[in-house]
Amino acid sequence: MSEVINKIPVISVVGPTASGKTAFSVALAKRIGAEIVSADSMQIYKGMDIASAKPTREEMQGVPHHLIDFLEPSEAYSVARYIKDATEAIKDIHSRGKKVIICGGTGLYVDSLLGNIVFDEQPDNTEVRNKLRLRREKDGIEAIYRELQEIDPETADTLHINNEGRVLRALETYYLTGEKPSVLRARSRSVPTPYNSLYFCLNYKDREILYDRINRRVDIMIENGLVEEAREYFSLSPENTSAQAIGHKEIAGYLRGEITLREAADNLKKATRHYAKRQLTWFRRNENIHNIYCDTFENSEKMVDYAVGIIENSEIYKAGEALE
Image (cartoon, rainbow, N blue to C red; front, side):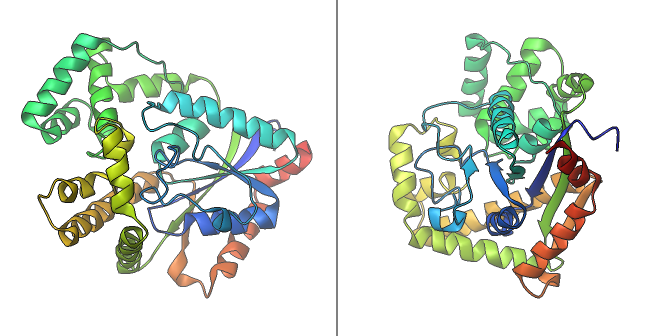
């Protein structure tokens, strides 16, 4: 207990896209008196409501959410900045006597924040960046991504190929420093984390249930105006990181008249399923995660009961109570 008593307790709700993280985290927050800090790299952008599955006011059910819908589409955002912003939000929530829930599927954000990984922002190098951009235009992002896999497979494993900005940035960091980004991250772990973390990962024993949820979500997104949202983002700038998000990128071919809307929807479903697999692979590495298999519970209330039982019996909960 002595090792955890002076740290801020944080509950993390992670899992693949369409697994039900938003509804679960809101229900859990209401039960334990918590506020939610988002860990989603696309929900940060204003206007990207449909593609990022941003929670609505109704879905939030009065639970305060932080780091959602605050960034202009033209603005770049880094892991280092996320750690800074999330740290400030956590301190604020904790100072008001509320518990903290980190909720999202961007594993790099969650692990970097809770693991206290220090990211030194490398200065932009126009020459290196332009060379990488020219190579991307000539050979495609697939070739750039393969190079990153060869140089630093650990970092490549953390990035989706559609996240072109971060793929390019990872290679830029390597060329500027001469070291793999994964090595730089590992070196930064010298300072102990200020958090006591408890992880829950929403998952499904029957993977087909998750894939069906993904397929249905895509259909609903299109019905709710995904095409119009993507058109607006591409009109702002097709080079924006936000415009390269899953959900917008797959619609681009339809907007250019190259494929039908049905084909675009099928591409989006496939890309989202692949992304979900990568998310599960990422979270599977965390030996401290408590898996909550949604399809093994009678209802969502039973899922929350299960999580609350684990929280109340954990050291971080008892340490958090002692701090209050």
